[in-house]
Length: 70
Length: 477
Image 1 (cartoon, rainbow over the protein chains, first blue to last red):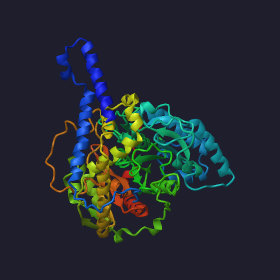
Image 2: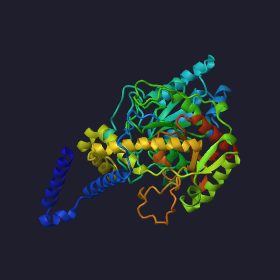
Image 3: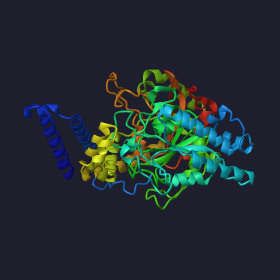
Image 4: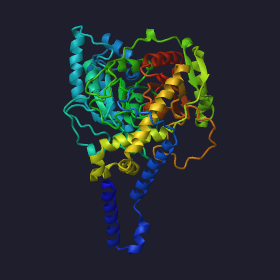
């Protein structure tokens, strides 16, 4: 996905910057920026939601609540 | 110039209106007094996003002229109020509580602002909020352009979100009433934490035109006030069909307490576990007393449990699908990094990874949720729960409960997930203050069938005629 590509590029750029700041390349993966950890956690939360919802038995005839009315 | 007595700041709309008509003070005097108080005390709670003093005083002069000529326009005429900064006010900044949108200006008032000012109510300020109404999920009370919303009952505690400023401003007597918005809990939570009365209307009853969209199928705008009756008066003014809101239900609301059924004709669904085991220990006696007060009104109580669905996951997925689309350009831009809360930034980015099939499945399960609630309301007229199971958390602690001790969870879920469930089904809810725990407000919540607002307000009013929790206000800071 386009978004993922751009994020990966940004992460790559951060690794480069960290390296340029004087750390060795092998240190870089251990210095995972907190933002990336947050993003991983957020994606995992979405995936967990998806798994929970998938457990609800859902007949094929049920349509989405579009043009939702209370 | 009349000296404004300090009790006016905690008057209901009806009381203020009577005093204005009795010429105890003019509308300009009342407006100036509220503006002074909002500007002086609002920042103390990080509740004020923008003072609108100049325009407010201009409107107040018009109201004084109208009253002098006998042109009365209802109880809201001349009453100072505030709105969550998610609502557009023309030619004024509308920040959505978020730094990247700090310079945003719209050229037209939100529908609800037009409606209220049209009745002669005086808009004196915009009130702070969690950035982007917290759609990406947030971990800190400080997830706001104006800093953490501080609770007037205890400034070390949070005022709740995402309508943080609306809750604090009403509780502290900085406005006579306020508008908030709710996608899932953003009216009920600050109302409960701040000890005020909040009404989440049925989905579609109030137009969202001019409000920040977070979720087309979940967003609602509603009143946050001093009493159930005040909520009804404000709702009467802001409800109604609007062709510019595709979610509009095409109907209005007339406050008609006379048509509400007597409490003795009502069956209220509740779960004992919600009052005995789920709430924080210090809240239980106050909540049980409130349950007793409701019962003493003559209602029939019936034990029920919510239908089993993954409500939190459904709300999260639906918001992710809709907000991900609404904010896609923003999320893909560097500006997203300017938000205050890292969890929120990550949550917004993760929205773009939600497959369409997940969103559609959630919306299909939502159809089942609605059917299940229709069935539930065959057995009872309303549902009753604690508005929140905990008091306002400390502002400097993570909101996801990181570090709080794990307790042994009851086996029954009761109605614990009624906030996401009620929002998924588009149901109206009324949050009523019902006491204190450790000097912090606690509340109960009534939830009804769609368009059942008169019934909720009727029972809320009966409860408030027997209790005085809604009349308490925090000590002057």
